[in-house]
Length: 268
Image 1 (cartoon, rainbow, N blue to C red):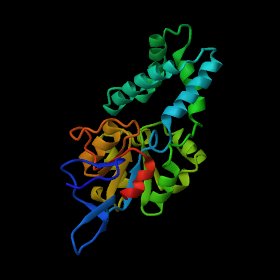
Image 2: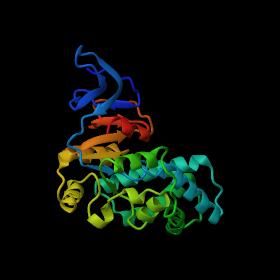
Image 3: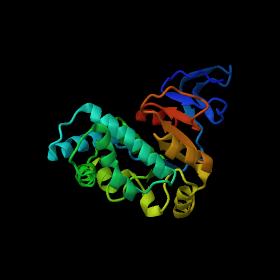
C-alpha cells in the first residue's frame, strides 16, 4: 500500500496500479512519496466537465438567482439558494436517468422551488427565462481551474463534456478565457444522449476517431454523470470532490480523487 503524503489526492483502494513515486531510489528501493504521479504514458486526451469543474455553477447560479429575484421584486435570502440547489440536483439526476427532459425541467423547476419557498404570484416559466439571461453569460471560474486547464492543454488534447444547454456553454467558457484551450465541446443536447449514458461516450469516441477509451481520462465533479459513466466505458477517471465529501472507497469508481483543481498537476 502506498503511503499517501498529500491528503488532497486519494487513489481508490484496491486500484493502485499505475502509481509511482516521483522520488524513488532504485538502489535501496525506498519510496519517498513527496507527491504521487500517475503513470499515464498512454494518455492522449482529457475529457473535462464544465459546471462545478471548470466554471463554478454554484456561484454563477446563485448570482443569477439573486439578479432575477431583484427583477421580479422577490427578497432574496441565502436559504433560498439551498432550495434551488437541492431541487436542481434532483431534476438533473432525472435527466441523467432519462426520466425527464431539459424542456420539462425548464417548465417546472422554478414553480417547484417557489412552491417549497412559499412564494406566490410568480410565473416560474417567466422567472426561468430571466434566470437564464444572467446564467448564460455568467463565467465565474472554479479556483485553480484556468491554470489547471492551461497545464492540461500543454500536455494532452482537451475536450469538454457537458449536459448543460448548448447555447450557454461556449460563451461562458470564452468569457472565462477557457475556450481556447479546448479542442472540442461534447454537449449532450446536440448529441441526443446525456452523461452517463453509454451512447454519449460512443459519440465522443466516434467523433474523435483516433483515441481509445484507455487513452482517455474523465475529470469531473459528478459521481453519477461523470465518473460512473466514464468508468463503465473503460475511461480512466478523476473525481473533483469540491464538496469535500468523506471518501467512501466503496462508492466512487474513480482512479483518483482530488479536492482542489490545481492538484491535477500532481497526477497527470
